[in-house]
Image (cartoon, rainbow over all chains, first blue to last red; front, side, top):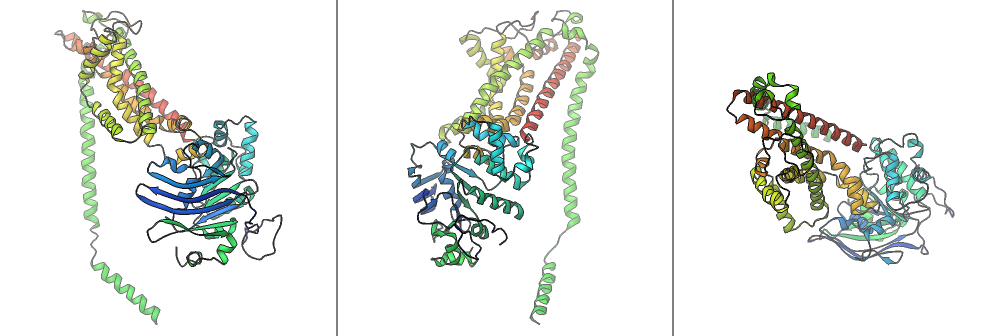
Length: 280
Length: 306
């Protein structure tokens, strides 16, 4: 595929479409989900999920609609705290520290683990303020102008907006808005970035830009992306986690592993059925 | 061969389907235009009534409009009577009531929408607030008389009048503010929380600015009501003959509607004309006030659309 452009430090010779820095056993795990269960009221939405997320890699969550992949993602920065009926059980370790504990402040978690949502949702403020606000409330003391420029450059948006930083973030195109949201997430200096189907509302060219951007960000950030688009998962991710539904309509983890293995030689027949389009 | 057979089948199906349809397009259009006329008539009735109301005031009052009506104090003689103290009294009361109900009302709305748990107690509070909006204004007057005039010992003062009026419009301000806060999209809150914002930072920087135009709409409606209310002010103790403008929150006061009520109750024909002229002045002030509030709201919402 045309987007396969990136050179890696230790390239393996391969003609496949997959990224070549697949996860190794020695990778440090940034986020570890242990026996995660999520209930919405009486509905048991996610059952016994175990996932390990490697540092400075892109991990993709894929699976059919309603399989709980977004729900799992939203547990990682405690966004489910905002849903009154949600109950999360199990354990999520962030660099070995439990973040589901009631003693942990979700504000602190979200400052470390940023999030980009499915639909671009810039603040109704200027482009500059969209990026600067998160840094400001988290006590950034450095040079704000430089910080905003750095974040916009990292999000590959600087060249397009540098002359109109005072204009509204809402006036940008959908793809630009989503990159602004990524810049906004970078501005709080997180370790992990969660993306919940970040390209599903965008056209193919904007989608491509987001994917290229993610692969540049990977060097400095640990990225988890939920996607419906299997080609996207194959193109950008190092590790793929496949979720599905069991017979009781609960979200379960079927299989996880290096993206190339999941897409070419999955262990589970359900994974293969989904990947090849026989189920979805 | 197979393909052609399929095409034929589809055509057959379409022909058969057409028989079971009756679009009645012209009948549907007729029904549509009948309803359009009904709605037009409803609007026309409202406009005609409003026009008659305006005429019944402008016709007797127009020739009695003069500067001295605005600048002079009330008098027993119609030719010399003005409503200066009433205008100032109304301005004090409306601004005082607006300030009180804005602070308390928006605060209540923020608490109920953003902080309070959604349980039986908050539902009970919510129902009561809605009911309070329908309580007759004279009841608020009695509450003000007991609570502000007597217990808080404010006397028959402009402060007691303003606070009573503030209580009267409070439920509407709370409900309008709650609705405006509820209308702020979830995505905006999520974006804010996702950056590690606390609840207060989210409310302060995103929820309130987005809700402010809606809150101001509620304030405009409430202030329009406050400027015209008479009964609670009479109960709290507005005098009809006040010969100086209020010089502080504890001074005695009158208000435009009280003045109008008093004049229209007098036997002399001249005072009826004076009352009509005073109503025109009240409407002009009301209109000016609303215009300022609407301009303010538009500027706010333009900034927020950014």
